[in-house]
Image (cartoon, rainbow, N blue to C red; front, side, top):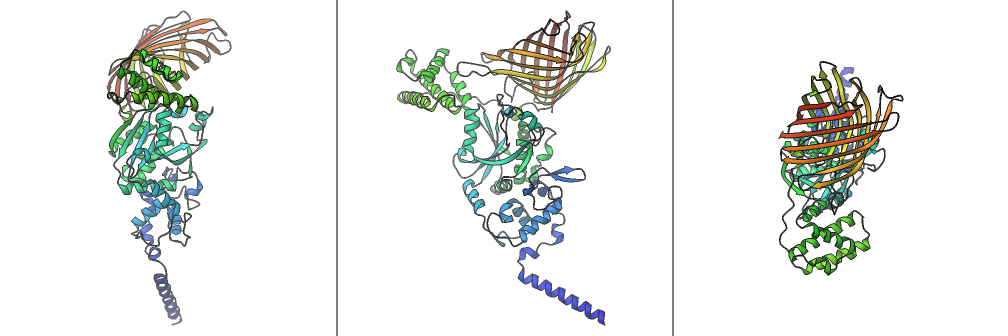
Length: 627
């Protein structure tokens, strides 16, 4: 009987406590049961919001800032983070932006939906968040790809950002979300620090016209705008997640956790069924993420925004070289009526249009002072207005879209013959990234080469299997010069390559080969170039008493497009070695690349060299598969 009374007392107390909670606690506190939340931490969307990736038997978030997590174990424990998040949302917190619901609006919106909590339940005031939404007014979104820029190491692969479109009629008044490392791209150690994660990366929000001013007007970078078919609610959820990432850092890695990879989380936060993250390979290159987004079917429209430099070059092609010289004189000296004498009225209009565009470009690049800019710009613009409306200039031709170019990784299989061996050889190669002069140019910047991790293995009956070369880095930027633009061309190559020595000896040596020079256009088909270069070899060469040799010389070449599917390249190189040993090294090569489709090409090459009185020649045909 004593036991029964105690049991009844306990049961009555439990019921009383439950009734007290039922009437005193808001609905949102008692509506959430363990059954409701048991599997939520395993939901794909929860892993998207927390940037979780598989790690061993569990998960680890790619966010490194501890302020992003409400649980001390949140970085590696999705369930603990979910429990801490629910506890924070359901606890008694003060109004204002410090309230967890204000701090994590994307988490709150999703959990409210999954747990059927009415949006009006226990509302809180979030002044800063409301201010941001009133400024952006998100309605839709677009992925933006500013194209390749070879003169800045931080921008050689291009870039991606997301434009958030609101109610403004002009897209320039929209806002753009960007992820970038907190680093100066001109830092001497930028590449090393970027590769090994020494920089912190942050999300930021800018007016879109600032991005256009930076990329298109100042850096000669065309911009591709991929409109996304997001609904208004999807765009809003993306902005909610962007707000959660405000002032939160993750370590930036140049080849994987970079600008493009992290932006995919924003897109998945808007529409988790896209599963973009799982489609990315071990290397994340901006144009590859653009391809993944296009392949997902979410792109509704594509718009090309040519850079100011592209518009200037297009205008210059509409007039004669003499007229181009006159436009440049207006830019450098200012406008005077006598400069236009001898030109027809329509050509005068184009000359002045070109002058105005060039002055704006030079001022954006800080190549001229404000005083000179205002004086020369106003003079040219005033003279142009007096000539009236001109004939419509042909629009800037839309180039091949970057996402339709070949993929970044390459597998090659080839067969060839060398005259010094007289035997056929077989060759297989793999390239991690990204594009070489031998590849089809569609979708890429003509004259650019950015190669990382290019390895080739060769087999023949005399030497068996051997490593032919392993390029760690091979960068070449051939930027043609004209009257209006004077870029410098350059190259830097380093890795291991096989060199020929007397008595049919071939040795693998380390090579560093930098160079600088000039390139010039040949009509509209291609261009020629010349580079002064140095060549350092380190290894166990039979003739090298100190295991190295250093030479200086010249490389010159010609690149042409015979047809849209046939690319031709010729190169001549002469090096003079004066330290340790005195001799010359000469090399001639030509390559013909035939584009089959986006994923396949064929390459026929011939090369001949002279070294140590040997003159071996090599002919090879290879099939290249891009993936």
